[in-house]
Length: 113
Image 1 (cartoon, one colour):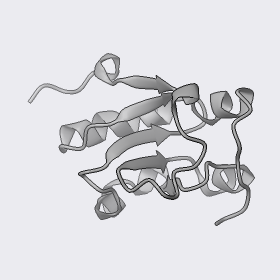
Image 2 (tube, helix red, strand yellow):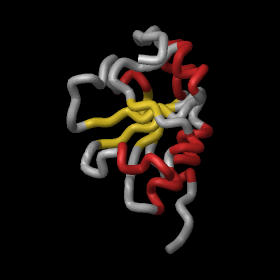
Image 3 (spheres, one colour):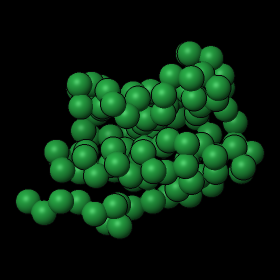
Image 4 (cartoon, rainbow, N blue to C red):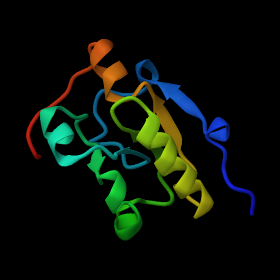
């Protein structure tokens, strides 16, 4: 199998995503930032699995859901998506990450919840 190039990973602008993923069983927003970044502000309904924990916690990612991955600015998202694609979990990178989310005035919640 050829390695997945980050150039092959689809991206979506934050403006095309809902503000809240809580009640959306068909879509999953995976936030791969570290705990302190998550606590500082995240998308309601996102699933938080830091980058380094993704392989060990893969069972928490629904393979049937439409998967979106977000980090601070897209770098970690692309790395996670390249890995996930190789193991059969296709997904989309949230273009610009939480930086773009914030810059576009989209709502965030704080804390560990």
